[in-house]
Length: 333
Image (tube, rainbow, N blue to C red; front, side, top):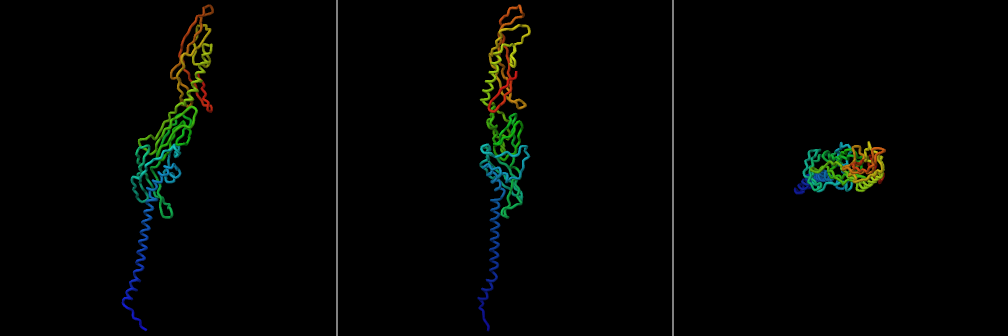
């Protein structure tokens, strides 16, 4: 039996059979292009170098040193390592914005601007692309250079110093690596010394990155030293000797026989409490005091004793130590 097919039936079957694979292929191709495009956009926005820089400064803003360090491959050669981001002792940059980014294959340079203590700052950061991927697709970036700055604290002769909440031994110059921001420097609680907090800055031009500590004597320590110094001199003045033992004044007697001697403090010396080159806390006279001796003197056994009175200036030195919360002044004649 013979079946005749209409020309229109032949045409429809022929065209349909050839266009379907083409359309499917085009759909797959377009979907692939769209997927790749979306992935590129996601990678640039969520995993690109700019995203790493923003995440780094976001970690600084919440004082998360571990999160910040995870984004940095740069190391520090500072003798005292990286300084911490501790509470109010650390002031992070604010108003952070990416100013520019240049990407060349696996290396990028990002200029980031921010504000520290009201001053505008801008630094370049060099980033490298990690070989490891997230989700098997996205390459992350890490900061390779430009995130760590040196700060320096000269602790002088103080026993200990606190930098951004961390207390370290003093009597040395401390050099740290630091992320951008401000770091408070002060002293731990001390019965003799106090220090108004000072701040050093990392990654901030025109702001100090180094500090030399100049501690002041606590008011209570001044009072304690002054009271003990006066008691010592008053005790010296009660002596009936021409040269009271352990005292800073004496009457030079070569020819006279002396009797009925009496000392009186006319004025007490003015003093300062400082640290010497060994770190010891000492009292130094800045203005001499005056003492007066009176009594009787004669040239010999048969000479009539005559009254006399003479004045002399003197200084008083000594050492100050803290015995727990108590201040102890030990005079040195």
